[in-house]
Length: 343
Image 1 (tube, helix red, strand yellow):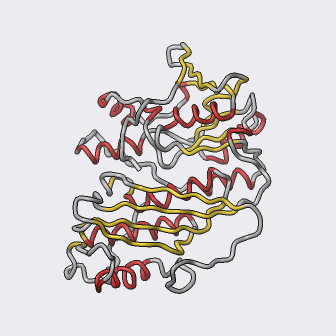
Image 2 (cartoon, one colour; image 1 turned 90 degrees about the horizontal axis):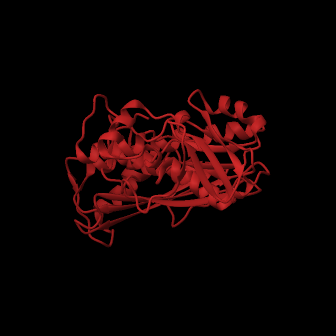
């Protein structure tokens, strides 16, 4: 997603080159931030007047609610920034519940010394990502912490969505013979963050796959696909997501390594850095578990990059992968994170 930063910031950036606010959040600059920067940026989305909370009307039926915090470093990276990540990450969590995302809240923890231009860019990214995902930012909060205490900016988002179907989408709904469908190539987000953080350069720029997934998921549901389980492949990547589902569902998941798509640049970077792409984070990829007779139709809906990478077997909560040389190996979670601070 490309954000147009040529828009004019309503606060003269030359007057406030840095955010240097007191803890209490008062003062003219904070008032200007809320009134002229945030309120103006989200005016096309927000409903209701400035108040301590948002009042909105939701559709009757089942609702989904999620919250997450974002501490990625660096805050700007190829393919996105902490603002796009915060919106898409929360929208995608709602989508994995089978919900249509509706509303978001955004809380920002700002460090003294954060350049105003950076804050302006991030605010624009949040607004653009929300527009692209079809959600409204309807409430938020801003706090400032001492220099050296906040690493630039942290963002917390919460999201509300509505479920318009009767499916129970969860690991407990996974059944033997279900097809396991991967929506696209893996590993780009984590490698993009690592390259930006460490100043690494490769033959071509590796961009994050950060993107909203709700449209893809809702298309599956609208087409009548009997979706049993969905999971986005964030921290811990594909491997951790599959292990979590297999463990919670009490089934064995068998996948074929040769089928799993990995961009050649990402594969090469992983080899250089000693990383396994199966465990590298993604922010725009997910797996879907569907009945075998609907697998091809689901793949077609999910897009040209989607592929069936395996199936579910009766078993005892584990993941077995057929390697490229034809040997089977158990896939487990890592004891820690390969790449910290990637979301």
